[in-house]
Length: 268
Image 1: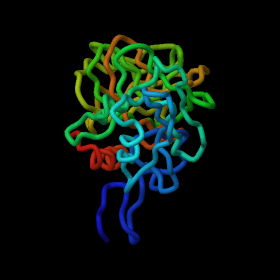
Image 2 (image 1 turned 120 degrees about the vertical axis):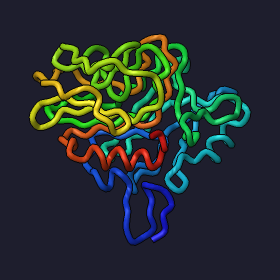
Image 3 (image 1 turned 90 degrees about the vertical axis):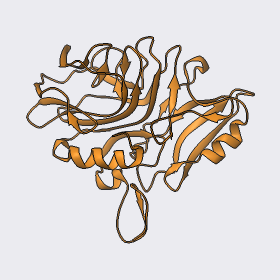
Image 4 (image 1 turned 90 degrees about the horizontal axis):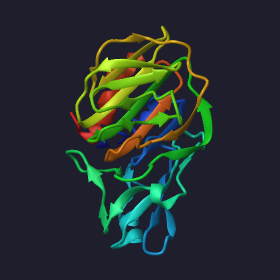
């Protein structure tokens, strides 16, 4: 068996994270999460507003095709393709609100390994789901991002509560059932964040595979639908690259899921 990367192993063994942990409700990323996924995103170039789908090469974003298409111009994300198999793509058709992925011909990156990312520093950044859906009584969400601003909604959210993961200047909060659950003071920096509602209706958060605060009792899930991903709530600069949500209790697998994702990003 020859290791290519944490998500791709030659014939005799491994799998992509969504092959291991199937039945995700939605999954968006700039790297390949499922063996059946073929597209990551659709990109618009600034020179003539032409658009092109971008897929993967050996599990990574096909940056060769991306940079060839954009040239010396800027590139912006029009669509993130849902890799869960549920075809719930996330779109942003308003040019000023699109997240940037190429800047003057150079890939937008962050992290110690320079992984591809999307960036938003002005305007509204949310991508709208094709099919909004309700918060579940059990759910598990992973988000990969660089928290460098004031207020950021990471992963899935609604126009109002619930925000399953919201970072403000001084604390991490989890909105559900119209209330705010505060897990304590957090810091800026690169993070693999996990937020979950488990089968005991407790809410929990992990940063870089370390529990953040304590589990808090959850109320009745909000009836407000999730409608968007990667919403730049405040005036923050925001990098984001991966969001996966399962409507099931995967809290027993936190360590494994964190480790698999970190093997790719190398954040901690």
